[in-house]
Length: 283
Image (cartoon, rainbow, N blue to C red; front, side):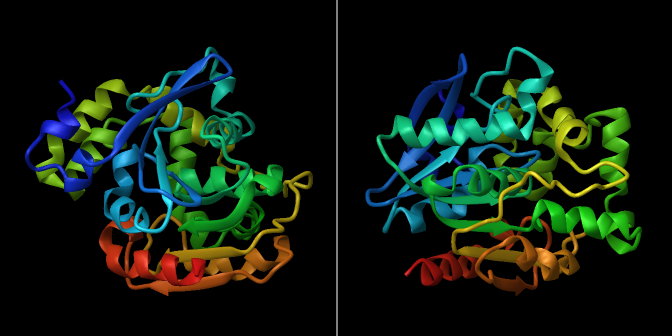
């Protein structure tokens, strides 16, 4: 039984989406899809799965073919053969394979949290496959490195990440507990996703991808050439708004940046505003 689609308190979109699977590098990956039109790919963060986008999918699907992926290691998607399979260089190939699997050449790429990290790198590595880039919460990777190197407020806010790099995924920093705190009625959904999630998928992201001291810039990362929208919650306690002031240095076009009165999960706390901002910008 698909608990997600049969749980009565699930968001209605759970009963509308179509499940799909594709394969990349021997890994079977899961996604959900709704709508017709230009392709728009949603990439969730940590600790989440596709349901992170429940407030966006239906609204955006009125204009786009919306596809929300379970990143490798999360929920119904498979695990890589080795720990190195969680490096961002590998994660971006999943998005490229998804676009090709759907028979498309390009997509609007939208990412939050760790998904935004993947989205930044995807747009740099696969510029021709990225029609537009939409980032929630995470500054450009080099902007974040600069913030951290100054050992100011962002360095303090990233203390949890340095701890994760040493200790790994803690029990309270997992799909089930975090999701249940934000959406108690959907607890069975998050706990079901938790059972399918590889703890290493969370640990490896921080150990392999999140910046480490001495926070050297990623010199081989191509400049972002596509139009970019950034949406950020001013009350985000993990990623501070100051980092976004540095983004433009690594973009060939000045990004559109919108700050909202919200926390880290801006798309879940302020869904109407986020949806309207995205749609207006894409028009």
